[in-house]
Image (cartoon, rainbow, N blue to C red; front, side):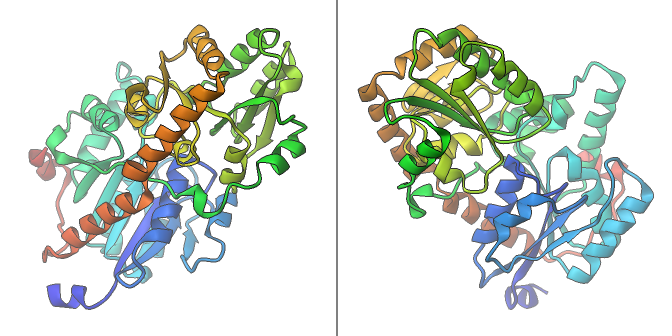
Length: 398
């Protein structure tokens, strides 16, 4: 069996809810694109629909399948997913976050897929309180279901700690594989002036930007409030918000009702993120919760100084202030002070150089991909039949 597996490519099914423009989805696409093609065959399976993120896969031969199921668990959804997985003859399924865990754990057994890797990217269980009945039920379900997987991975140490807190799973059973990002410099960052002209931003303006899903956890209200309060003190300040999501209309309304209304630009979700990063002078992450932010790493790869809230692994990413300014989460005054500090061009240049150096040393996507390749090989080199274990009998391994 081992010889047979080593003689062919390892087939990996990367499971996502849908290919919307989000961090976990970008991670899946990047992993699929960078796995060694002579050794691995990646397939992306969307539990719901493909959506617009499929454009990330243009000019690749990575197949995408969609089960078309609705949110929530049902017996029929498990069978729908299994019917997609079985003919693919996968060696491994690789699920992302709570939203795909239960479905993948059951469907892969129905389809006879030998191995299961589960990865948590950030807000475990959707930051649901464990004090109510629904939250406790989800935590128990996650504990039981992770027990059926071959490997549980966290993208950051903070995420691992959150899994332990939520489920009681022992930390030594959770492998940490840090996220990595592609180098935007390979595409060239020569479009700064073009993007600024498109926005109507002068060359002298200081553009503070962010790339984020417009959701409550990203707390972009704080950035908008800070911009309004700084409008008279920093007349050259411009805010660039790249992304879309459920909070967009509320944020647009908030941006339009203040002194900085004409200086706040919403450009929606964009595939060519590197172009928009090139127009920025400073990158901001205002999140209330993070794992290991892909967007912060992309900004650092582009040589941008950063302002980040002290959540998840944010402070660790920027070297505890070596490549950016770390502020308390939810502190608008601290954000305003950091933006004012970033008006110094020499300060920005120094932090930007350090950010780029840290990316090259620690955050290149090749490190992340090699770690997953090693994990996949490790699983497929273990010759064992598909376990027909029950939830109860697996609890003793936690």
